[in-house]
Image 1 (cartoon, rainbow, N blue to C red):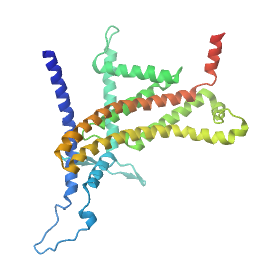
Image 2 (image 1 turned 135 degrees about the horizontal axis):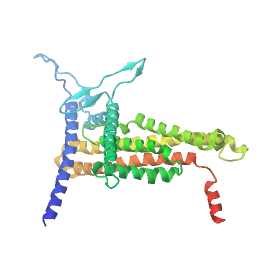
Image 3 (image 1 turned 90 degrees about the vertical axis):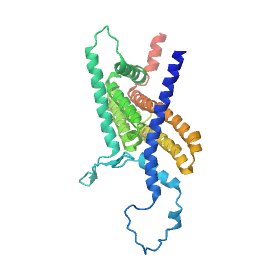
Image 4 (image 1 turned 180 degrees about the horizontal axis):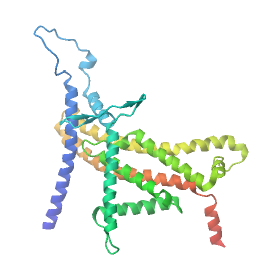
Length: 340
């Protein structure tokens, strides 16, 4: 009986902690919405003889939904301000060199934070592995990292690429942990999802694209690489097949880009929209019955999506590399050898 009570108490505290995270994040958003809804400048001088100012009807009756939408987009899009409402905000430096804007934005800061955390984690894991003996079993974070690394090595890289997968394992592991940590930090209050920026996902997909092409050139040579663009068809069909195969080279990284970007952005928009429904309708009943429960559900779903999207990006990258480096006819040849 005591064990059941302890388990129930732990589950209760987990729910309370999750509610605290959501309410902390919602509190900052509500504060921003209240500021936008005030509509009256704080430092506007007033006089006793001032005449009433005519306000356009479109502005006077502007729906709060539009203001909530502005706050949501401000939270989703990249900018030079790191907001910590109601505690304040930090303005990031704007840098322009030779007409190119290389300013530091909140997504750039999150990329730096993710890189630093990964370096620290794997430095700790590496140092602990060096101190371990053959009779010791890994524990804690070392055990967790070993399980994830082994999963990516066996079930992703080796399964999709086949022989020679070791050359690409370092890249696949880096991409998996980088995307995963970017996704998870986007769910932390006052954090930002760097993978919700299409520039970040496009850069990651571009790395996969170039590695895929290099793998194809190494496996088939330049002649085999160019022959692949013909699709193995009759020369009379090359005028159709070559453009199709050439476009197909770029549809794969585009699919990687859009899938990761859209999934991470959509989840945050849904959570913020659910939170703002109670503020728009100004109803505690809506907040208790719909906003908070559904926000918690989507938040938990986003935790699952964070791992899922990191896995999908890594798995598709390894699949594209495997398809590019595979030799046609290998399976038929092996089957024939086995038959004889």
